[in-house]
Image 1 (cartoon, helix red, strand yellow):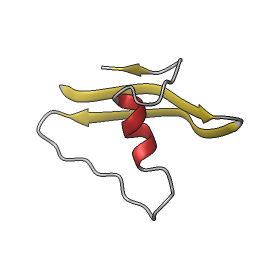
Image 2 (image 1 turned 180 degrees about the horizontal axis):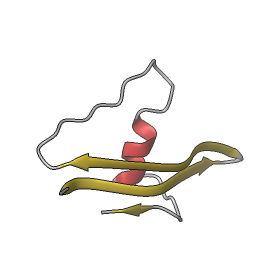
Image 3 (image 1 turned 180 degrees about the vertical axis):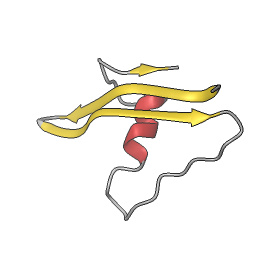
Image 4 (image 1 turned 120 degrees about the horizontal axis):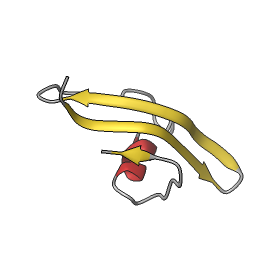
Length: 62
């Protein structure tokens, strides 16, 4: 399977709060993927980490 986005072991800590821990996501080429949830649940946090706005020392994004 060809992947457009492959995220492995994404973890985000802000201050002393662990926001995300070891998230793994693969988005196949040609597929649309969404993050759905209520306001404030952390939908934008993985995206901000993927683009480098939030630093995550253990992530592997390809």
